[in-house]
Image (cartoon, rainbow, N blue to C red; front, side, top):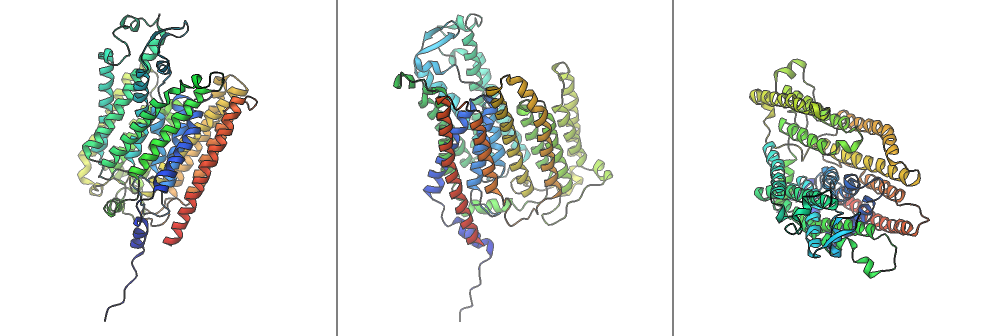
Amino acid sequence: MDSPRLPAPRFHARQSLITTRRYDLTHDLFLPTLLFAALGGMTWAVRGCSGFGATAGCIFAGVMWGAAWWFIAHDPTREQSRRYASGWIVLALTVGVGVAGARGWMQWPSFFEGRLVTNYAKGEFVPISKSYGFLWLFIAGMPWAGLGACLLAWCGSLRETRVWHWAIRIASGMAAATFARYLFDTFPEYFLPLYESLESQYHDFDANPSLKRLVGDSGLAIYHLGWYLGFLSFEVARREWKNVVLILTVGVVNGAGWALCQNWKWAPQVWPNSTFNFWRCWESSGGISIGVALGIAYFLVNRKMSDKEQATVAARRAVSGPNFEWLLVFFGLTWLLGLFLRFQMGGWGSYYFSTVILFGLAYYLLNRGTSATEAPRWPRPGQLIATVEWGAVALAVALIVGLFIPGREFLPYARLYWAATMVCGIGWYLLRRKTFEAEKIKNTPIDGDPNLERIGVYLGLLMGLGLSLRNGLKGWFNIYRGDEEYWSRTLWQYLGPAFLVCLIAIVLWVLFRPVARNLGGRLFPHTYGLIWLVLIVQNVIGQLVTGPLSQWNEMAFSIYYVLLFAITAVIIFHYHFAKNHMRREIS
């Protein structure tokens, strides 16, 4: 007689339910692409409005894409079915897209009109082929979207990532960017348009000021392309093929999309009597292009994982408490982020990033070497000095001091002191590491510790929404009150300390109200509320900086933003309904 069949464990039931269908064109391609494109159509158009531009405007778009990707990819269970579903994605796209925006593109659109402008004020130009316009928009478009894709890929690496892997990853981008800049500066004839016939003009910026802008924009485009290719080469060397596909897809698709859009220089010929804001139309179509690239990449790399991938991810989530490797990665990425973005924050950036570094140190000291079921414990003062934690403290102090380095006249000496402290701290760790056996954990828990994932989500939202709110209010005051610089300083007087208080509150909440590291249930029960917060805040800001509704050009874009908001709202509601249905089936 056959023995009765026992019910399968809940974990296996979840796995079976999650991985039953790994291919769904509607939810894996069409809806994500439409969602990202609609978000890009609004946010990238706002990117060029009053109060925004450059990095500030790209952060505005990045946080929207990051929050949307995370929301539709994240399952209402601890075990995720998709590879790129980490909460760190919000911060990754906010930063990646933001950093990529630290350059301009104003010098290339004239190429599509057959003109290379040498002196815009005097109307001086020389004839040039339109093909240069296609080439440079492709070169510019690849890293503009691709750098965000590089950081997004870091959130879903399948292979183990040790601290030396991270060092090589960052060094690969840095070395490739440095080499690209060296080639551009040393062999300008291979990069600058019509260099052989205009060499004398390229060396006389006083008489040809527009060429100075062209050299600057082209040099930065090649420099960013170097970062993009360097990060890509690292993923190729590691054979992280989904990361490679993600980075290549976003870069190539957007490069082609930007080139085809031609900065809308064709529009005046199609509508010769129109006074419409064609430049903002180009901005919007550029954002749609990035959104389409993200949607296609989502389909190619972020469909539901195979059983093998799922098992690998589950194994990585079994990691114990934070080790020193995790702390080095956390410190290093925070410090690099501070170098790029702290000056975007009105002088408050050093305080923000110092708070984040101190959080990393406190979280490490509290949770080092403890298993998922053990209670956190603070080290005794004597233990702190005698063991590896002293290296962590010294390193944190060095990084914080680096963020508060004064003017350029003190910079060489400050860097020496700073470097000496870092070497001392890391050296102490290397000497004492054998006495701290609990540190010998192979994997870093950056993939699996739920409290760290929480900090990633909320840091990304605070940074993206905070900067967007400040820049949007600055833009509104500039449109309706004037004197943008005055309002910029005034807003930071109030919002700077307010954001710092919010950051400290988030840090204390994660430190003193942590969730269990072996959490089996929902980590983010309020994802639906968070995505609506982002959508509403960003769309309100978009309306604020659009301009007076009495002007038809501005009114048209206000209506356009409302239509895009309606599209995104319907898609978000649909995914929320689908997630609730999935949660009910699992329970």
